[in-house]
Length: 72
Image 1: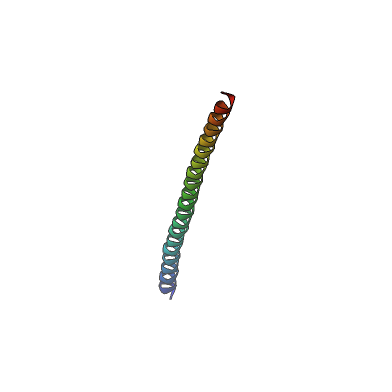
Image 2 (image 1 turned 90 degrees about the vertical axis):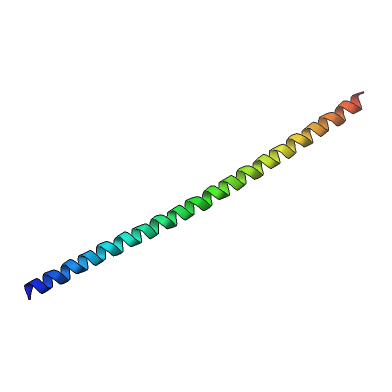
């Protein structure tokens, strides 16, 4: 009976080891997906900020042109 119990314990430990590795990989995939979505959000915010900056710059240039025409 001792050998049978040892085999059952070893199989149980091996099963838990395999399960733990699978769960660890799932956690890593979840974190990778989270990081990718955060990177995409940051990129979208940067693009929107660039567009707003260009629009403000264009608006400022138009105001400067209007002021130059008024002063003439």
